[in-house]
Length: 99
Image 1: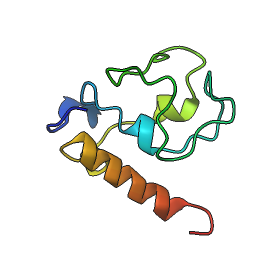
Image 2 (image 1 turned 30 degrees about the vertical axis):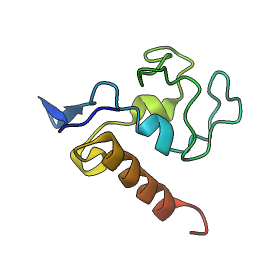
Image 3 (image 1 turned 90 degrees about the vertical axis):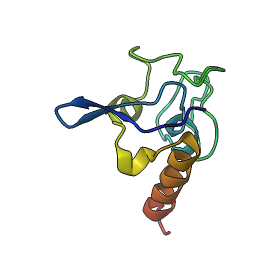
């Protein structure tokens, strides 16, 4: 996984750290993913995350909408992939039904 700050690309948008993959591991996804028809729980690596931590279905119609709409930002991503995983895990816990 990669480390370092996010790059600001303008208009309130940030670029993902190349090879991070934290959101593809830490987030729960309830919609179907090719190879994971029931989605995936938080903390489970998405089957579509390649060995170099890139999305194998990026830009394709079968990519879940939640993935396509998720945007990196410093508060979520922190300064390292490990920090991003911890931040996303905390968000998952805080928004878990009944949690």
